[in-house]
Image 1 (tube, one colour):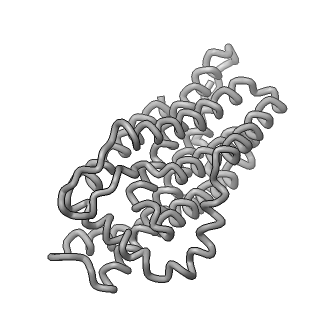
Image 2: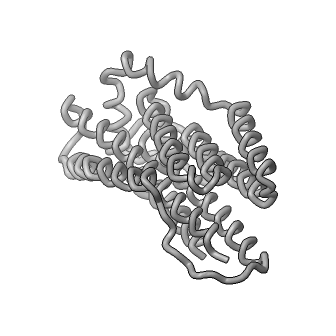
Length: 279
C-alpha cells in the first residue's frame, strides 16, 4: 500500500512539475533564469560536470542493471531481480515516452521555443541505477547505498544545469519518475512477501539509519535556499536578467535538484525497508 501511494504521489509530482514550470509563462520564466544563470562560471564548473554526464550511457545503464540483477541472483532473491529490472527499464522508458510523446513545451513567449526536455534522461538514468542498488544490497547497507545514490543523482542533475542541457524542472521530474517506479517495485516486493505464507510478526517503524538521517537533513537543508530563491525569482517584477537575479535563480535551481534527490532517496529507503518488514 505504501509503495503504491508513493508511486501515485510521485506521478502526480511529475505532472505538477511540468504544469507549473513548463506549461505556464511564469514557470518558464523562472526556469529560464536558471538556464541563463548557468553561463556564469561554466568553463570552470564544466571540468567537473562533464565527466559526471559522460559516464551515463546505454552500456553504463545495462552494466549497472546487470550487476544489480547478478547480486539479487547470488542472494537467491529471484523476485528482487525482476523488481530492479522493472524499475530501471520502466523508469527510463517512461522518461523517453513522456519527453517525446506525452508532454510538450508550449510557446508562451517567456523563453525561446525548444522541444520539450522534461524529464531529464541523464538524471533518470543516474537515479534509476542508484535505486536499483538500494534494492539489492543487504538491509544494513541500504541507508548508505541510498545516501550514495542521492549524491550521485544530485551530481548528475546539477551537472545537466551546468552544461545547459536541462532546466531544474527536467531534473526534478526525472527523480520523481524513478521514485514512482521504485514505489511500484516496493509494492511488488511487499506483495510477494505477503503471499509467501510466513508467520505474522509485529510491524516496526523502518529504520533509516545514519545514512537515511543524513538524507533527510540534506534534503531539508537544500530545500530552504531553493524555496527562498524560487520565491524571490517568482515575485520579481519584470525580466530576470541582472547578474544577481540570475545567480540567485541558478543557485536555487541547483539546491532544488539536491533537495529533490535527497528527499526522494529518503522516501525510497523508508518504503523499501517497509516492504521488507511487512509480511
